[in-house]
Image (tube, rainbow, N blue to C red; front, side):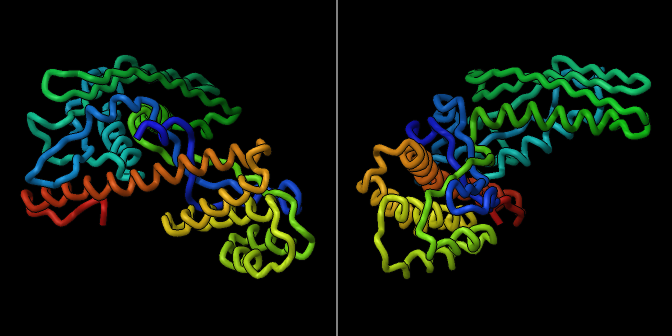
Length: 312
């Protein structure tokens, strides 16, 4: 599990950067690796009555400490933002019931300061996040965010709640990035191809990866390292939009062919291959973990009579 969490990995929709055949680039929305890998094992819970697999879940303590003298909307802002960020991948689920053996997330506002001037507003927020199981507080982290805006026209300055929302989003993102994959972006750069394959980049620009792959597959000319590397990127881009593991297997095969044809001596190919391998491993692990977490949510729904689930 640790291996594929040590670097960054990507998937999602793709944006085309450059239209030329040489050095054409795409940006693939993806995931970043959690930083506190060692702590993830402490979140895992095994309950044979729910599933044969261990699930990852948190119960959010609704009693946010330290908000009495701060913005009263901070508490719902923090809770809602944690739910939003942590369920991006469903790698960790939200346990609606909790319990003595559950992992609890508690939050405390350590510092909140809002200042408003004629043409400037400033806000400072500091929040402590604690994960615990019973009396064992196994992760305690504090994050800070400072936000300020200036405008000649005071009416264009954000409100206190708008600025507070931005700060909350920032500290919550820091916390979730420590314990779970988060969506981010990564660059992929194509190698030069023969002129007759120039349309491949036009297809990629329009995110038409299927036709780009089809054109590459129909090519009868020499297939060198560049060819297999670019084909791997196209498979990866297509897979990133659908989270299709089968398509990722095809991308993996093309990366391997590129490596065999000299890619192991090309820094661009080596780097892309390493990032892809980590992404591939993580996607499979995330899907597996999400399935185990779904068993917990279904169990909780059966207890409460609810049919709602973030997995639906």
